[in-house]
Image 1 (cartoon, helix red, strand yellow):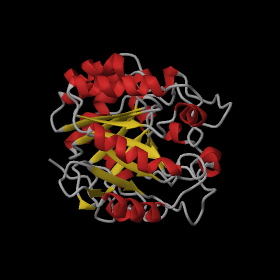
Image 2 (spheres, one colour):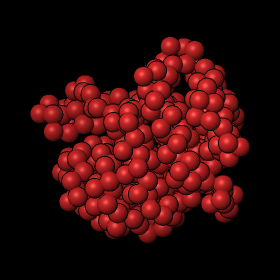
Image 3 (cartoon, rainbow, N blue to C red):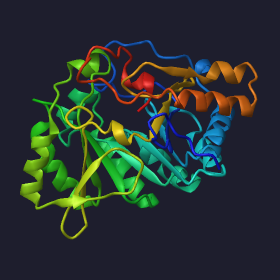
Image 4 (cartoon, helix red, strand yellow):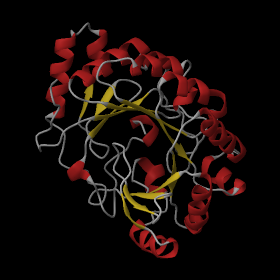
Length: 325
């Protein structure tokens, strides 16, 4: 098996695969109010095209696949796709990121299909505040989804909380307590200047938050398995883990092991840069698997050393749901 490596010696072993750019929520830091520029479904990669691309990545040593969106559970037959991807040689870890509003409906099917891990977005435990962030009264649906996921057998489940200054920053302690009570892993995330929605979100530097939570809950350095960039603390007894994803205050570009494939087949080499590869056009022009592999390898060789979110915060115009979570 070939190892996929960029020009900086980083092994690329993780593909974040968006199956739709659409979402049933309108989180303030993700999709601008009134935005209607979504791709038409005809422009999305088909399940056959997705399976073919993932098979090539798997042959190149990419063992971890994460299904994302938009909201991936809005894509019809998503569990069927998960089952197909799990069956591919070389794919050893298939996970999914979701806002969980539809999770109570699909948790059993996803678990049976082979999805091994779930990340659930939950920015507040206060229903009105969460509705203000997401544009919809959705807390009860998310909590139902989490209950269904636990009953289906998913463990551990990771909760992703984007920390927003003046909105939910004061809730991090209560979110820690909630996750401790229910056996969830919590990850706190800094906002990124992705499009106007991301730039307008009130950024919070999580370094001070980390120190505060470490002291209050008596946490020590820890490690959680997975392919993502979070840096972790854990409780002394090992029963709780708290991660920090800090693309601005403490970026993790030197260890970046991932690329993103958007719903329309655009391969993004870096979340904070614009160099891409249009895989949909290649697929629909009849490219061979050997040609597809060569094109992917050539693109990975162009993967930039790091993003420039801090130096050039106005650089990225596309919003997060267009890129893929």
